[in-house]
Length: 217
Image 1 (tube, one colour):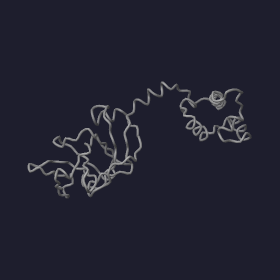
Image 2 (spheres, helix red, strand yellow):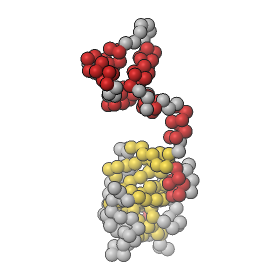
Image 3 (cartoon, rainbow, N blue to C red):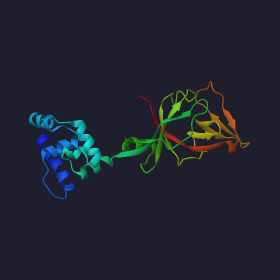
Image 4 (cartoon, one colour):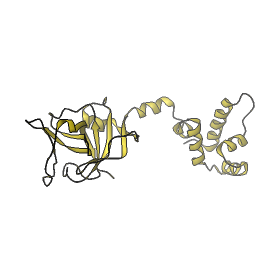
């Protein structure tokens, strides 16, 4: 990590690029960080770095914290970031392993997962995956209550073996799905104490296939 004085000089360079003319002084840096000039002078003398204020500064100016603290070039950061796979994570959404659960909405956050993990799950890394929670015990011991499952929406063919997310009038279900000879669709639990549920084809929409899971911490 670089010294505090070097960080100050970097901040001055950033601020000077925003000014049409004039030199940038320590007091200008202090003002930008929201620190009094007296406190700033004391921190500079002691080499005491105001991490929170600096992180807020980077967020406001859209700067890389790694560049500021470790002098890492943007190209290196991009290379490292590309090693991770972005997944849409619906933190508040549950797919029920018992009764119905909520439907998908737009309230999600992006999480980064090592590409090697995705490669092991799907066999490729060009898929768009989504992650939600399991609610209930009917898919035990395969999937436990509270586990996080990863869904590939492009895989909706229930004739291929696996576990699927099914949207019904009662909400979302996570089950094995089988179409019977009479055209009806069965939602099957791995926990044998739960009986299969039978629906007509127009009562169910396959959201996607579960391609992996992790235990929720």
